[in-house]
Image (cartoon, rainbow, N blue to C red; front, side, top):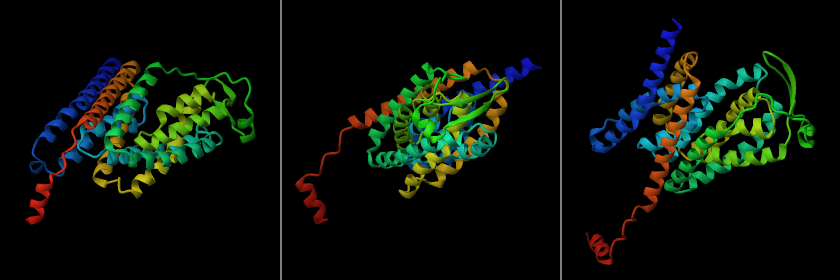
Length: 334
């Protein structure tokens, strides 16, 4: 019985990967067709299907939906990168808002730890969003490609520590009262943090990147909270998820105020991600973690390379020559 469920789980996971990798082919084929032959509902429907698969993979891989959403949708769908980043923030925000209350109730997410970090990260996310909207699209794609490939390196090399050794809390964390009690299944421990100032300075960069690219920031929050500042792993993961509900909200308002959030893109994305997450939770019980991890790394490497290629291609594209003096006179005469 267990073997059949495991085979079925692996089959669904392989099917999800095949569908996600096939989506660029479908997108390119549809994009090659004349604009007047493509019905308006085709792209939202494709978006619903792809984000459904993306929701499954995000749960299985333990990554936020925004990390997969922005490079894949921005690289293979005919939407402007500004709209994709705005939708990506809302995708990451919806998951954080859904999980936040439960994490706080379970005493996993720490308010003492999240409030000073959120103050820094959310302020910088606003700056990052404003800066990202002011940049040309090809520069954003170049930077996005480099960032995604950097995330791949982090995922490939990052280590985790369930219970980091923090011999003594630093002066700032003591003054802010950042400490707590972690109740694990096998032990109960008092936790504290150190290297608070370097951690907060790192969150300046994380906040700017989260707002600029619409990725969310769970991929960076957890290593900083866990490895640099010394919070237990589960506290770091839960606090990171809660942080997204503050950081992404700040950046999302900037995109919303600038008209970069459109319902045709956001609605199917949120529905697809949520439905896929429900299915992903069921598959997670029988899926093989190492396979899922390598699958997510491969997808991100592929999407990051595509974004980098698109940025370089747009940067090297010849600019249209200005109209000659005689052509301008002729057009005025008409």
